[in-house]
Length: 174
Picture 1: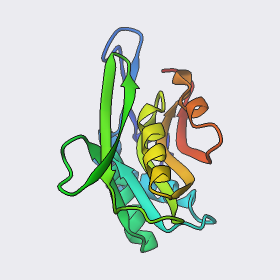
Picture 2: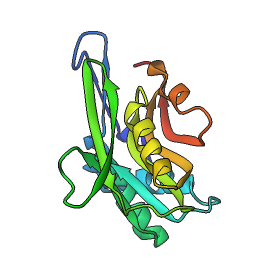
Picture 3: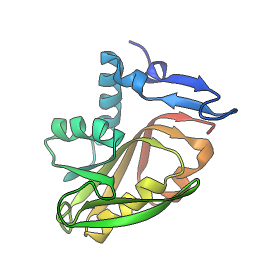
Picture 4: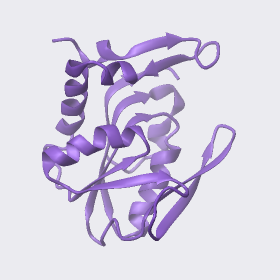
């Protein structure tokens, strides 16, 4: 069987010169790659006491949902502003140029619940930092943060210092 990294397509000079884009769709489009990705990410939770899996829009849904299903845990959505129908809490975070806002339902995490957050990629860490703050605002405890890929050159892990952060693949650059 191939290594997980072999399923990731690398596209040079996208979206701008000097950047290597790590394309997750090539993992999703291969049954063996998808299984290996889910299994690799889920393995980080083997010895973790977790009550709820949280996934961030949209690829966190793709990877978080099967993990929640396999572990028989509830799955909570973190979405872009204005996409959830019930009462929400929100958090704004910084992007390279500007800001964005994410939300989650106010009743999605109960005080004292142990939460694992799942997403496809950690770059600068802004989205996940905002998600962590919302989980904590609702009284949850973030016990693990799991990514498929990490771009080490963007130092996102530093923004998440103090949390148990894991990535199945780590790339040195941006």
